[in-house]
Length: 304
Image 1 (cartoon, rainbow, N blue to C red):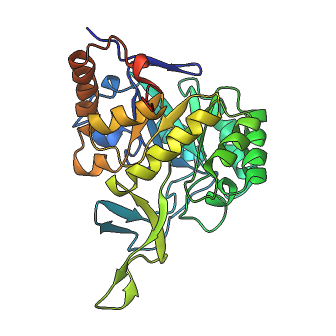
Image 2: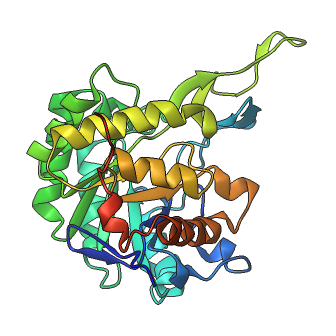
Image 3: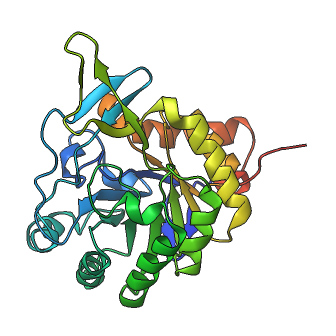
């Protein structure tokens, strides 16, 4: 038997495979396809302080080797999450992490404080990287000062594990990573989507109602790998890698680049059971290469 378990900060995961926020709903939507207990964890879709209707349709578009989305953090607000959703998912036999977003620092604080009181939520993922909202989101994730400010503000009220999700739409990912660590982040997750655009040549109009959206899928994997590797060399906190992971081989590459765990996003739309297949594929890889634990692979990129 091989050991797939990993520890990231205070979280003990049975394996390094998690779902990415916004691609897995709140977990309930996938119960016909997978058993949550087979995964390392689930990151539920973004929660904000108040109801958000999201952006106008159309807000998704296929692209070569990927997809664009501009959903806009649609959700019914943190109070609805606590009263209606949390009771249904709190007993999942896996770690449940809540993605927290906002338009202002005070909104991030409000949501984090309320989630802090939920016994069965051991961590939040602070979303300072969403490119699909007019205020907040990526605005915090592209400035070192703003990234430090919002991370520190949430750190002051949130007492459990704090993950900060980074945007790739920056000049220096290392600078932003160091900024959130300075603000008190326990872990970093990266990357979120790249800002992209699609145009309909026949109508000569943008495909998305918001003109631009977030590009995800296999097309962004090389960029994500590069950024995970760079950040792993620059900070001393665990990294959760994501961006175009479609199979176990992709997951292995992220682990070698320095990620302690990975998140699967767009692939869930193609194959609802892909996360289970990635877990099984990782186990097979370790056995074939005679590696006893997945921890031995983390950051084990042979560069010379």
